[in-house]
Length: 205
Ligand SMILES: Nc1ncnc2c1ncn2[C@@H]1O[C@H](COP(=O)(O)OP(=O)(O)O)[C@@H](O)[C@H]1O
Ligand SMILES: [Mg+2]
Image (tube, rainbow, N blue to C red; front, side, top):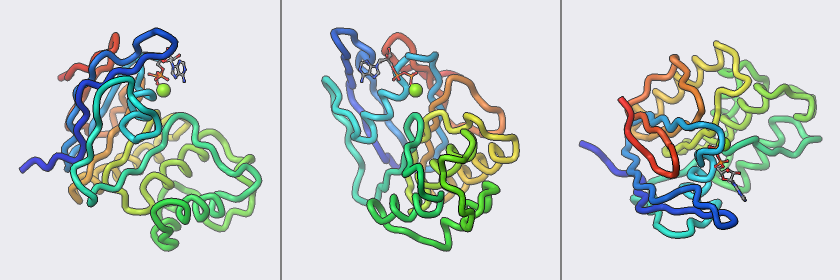
């Protein structure tokens, strides 16, 4: 049985007279890992911003199935409080948003080879380490509809495997993980693959 989590109908987005998205229809079902590929500038981040309500579409509608759907996201470069530690950042974001589960957050950090007790400000973190803190932020409140924009950027092999394992756990619990990236990493086992091209989205085999 397919449970629809999100429905996007006829999404258009125009920037400065240029249409970037030209009528995207997309249904996200629970229990799936979805990939959206597309060249740089094809509109992946724009689509994610619209799906997560950070940006209004020029036309079209995004609807969420019900209030059991809890959205988590990392879009483009995650921004942090640069002079605070990773843990302080996560605590802050958790309190702003969906609540903070310290035990689970600590466990997620550790699975990504990060330490909740690391005293360094996040400004000292590498691109891959920041990306992993961003991923933890997107899932630490047990979000069940998770959008990850280029999440493998800077990640080592082991971290990509951790991301694949966590994505499978969310899927097996009935949630969905939607990943946008210009390339496909073989470690992640996708149920649906789409290509964003010239403002439209197509299923790919
Ligand atoms: N806020 C904005 N104002 C103007 N143009 C934008 C804005 N955001 C994105 N664009 C343009 O929309 C197109 C798609 O961008 P983006 O969604 O970031 O692509 P992708 O994530 O696939 O690389 C690009 O041409 C980009 O320059
Ligand atoms: Mg992008």
